Image (cartoon, rainbow, N blue to C red; front, side):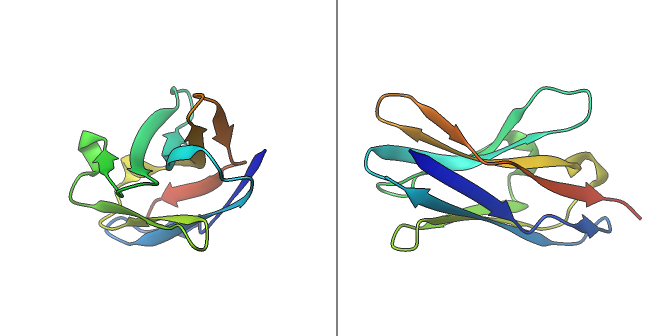
Length: 117
């Protein structure tokens, strides 16, 4: 079992920055990729960014490229999401995610990000 705990969500003005963190605990053996998803009110959950645990290969949804950066610290079992130049459309609950070699998914409880003036 893997437990994921997010932190860092907040209310921020457009153009501002936030840094989300995800602390993973439990058996990380077999985890191949971690990342962040988000879900806005009335919308489906969507992928934001992912990073492989081996090699650190990253992938981003088009709307956040150039503004968001995902990073990992395998020794500390943390994954971070640096979000710059935030826009109102980035408002959502952000979820940390991990997947293992058997394609089993783990989810955190979510952290709220609100971008508003």
